[in-house]
Length: 261
Length: 303
Image (cartoon, rainbow over all chains, first blue to last red; front, side):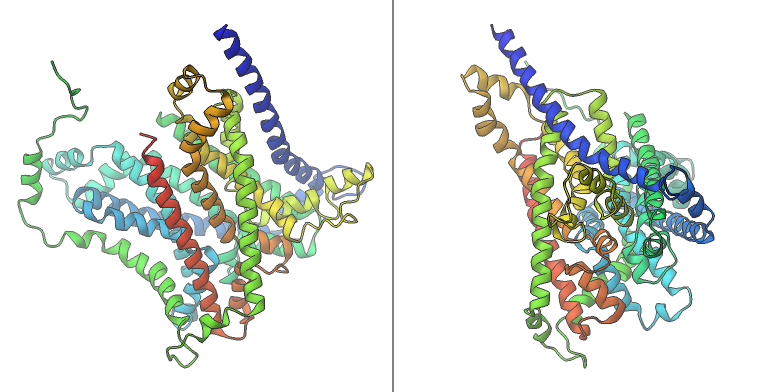
């Protein structure tokens, strides 16, 4: 009797579950299919890859793509150099500072990108921004700030999983100095965590529009937006490329996450 | 007889460690965190503080409350109102739809392949915002969009019927594309935390399924549910790129107004732009504070 009731319960539960899941999935899948479909219609009455060919033949595409990719790599590297030693030092010597660091790395959620860039421009309009590469420096710095929540969380989780104190003592008793410990002991032990933070940051930077556009930088996001004002089908091809890129970056993060378990 | 289970933590000679590290009294320890704090101060705290300071200064640098009072202008009030409405609507719908989907792949029993597919997709889609997302919805529901075309063929003319992708509801539908996945990502762990024993206990006491949800599960889930919605609110409230790319800056949102103020002093008053940005930070700060308060309440149950 009880078992029967339970089975009935599960049956109707599963029915509802399938219903919600199907409705939600339709909403997720239809725009993707529509975008792919739309991107193939550049030539009248036939489906084809004309829009994609147009994009890949556009030198501006590669210029802006490379620009954003390089900026992303610079931001990731700087973010790691700032976060890893700090998280290490706080764990080892200054645990009282942990809440402060946590608060600062969460601030980018409180200060939206458009407000951050507003503050940066107002603060540096007469100094850094008069410099020729000042805009790029501010862009990279802003991306480092945007990466803080993801990078710090990943590093902090990774740091808790290894025994920092023991590793440090072991390295010290073998005669290593601080630089060697951080570079050759701590960094390699955080490989998975760092890759995690790096790929999320990369995905964010590649599609970022607001900060790059308002700092007038030739990044991929502003390029995509500009293309929409003159072309009809190419933007949807770009959306497909961009979605594939995001899927690639986040997919790698999730595979890394699974490997950890 | 031992009443307390043995500690799971490995034995650590605490005294020895203390001795080793506190031995030399190191007054220079703080030097290690200087690069991080220096960077955060230069590129986050000073810019944020300058907004706050400049919003109570006039053009000559004198202290004034005029900028904050000027926020009562009809355009600005309406920008805040539309931004808040959009954020609340997408947080509510996104929260509810996301919760139902999260339910389906946890308590609802659709674990396995479907679950990991939805989780992977949610990880991607919650990061898929901005310009490309706007393009995807233009290709779907724009005037020439594929779905608009399908509906036309069965005799439904969306745009005749008053729908317009480039206005409030079009924006809301687009925002949901990252709001729903974000909800799924946050709520699945919370729903996984519902213990089977709670359901069994309430069934043993004769509770119906509705009573279980009404009096046991929902009260436990409520802090995470509300917390998620607050996070969604902030997520939509701070969004700029999606709205800009979709409407070309033609919708009156706070973020769009700040963007216009940066590119060309649209308000014709620099101080007012600062006050506008300050208002955003205050609203975001309040919602994050509420979120962390709810998080602490959740932590009581999920141990």
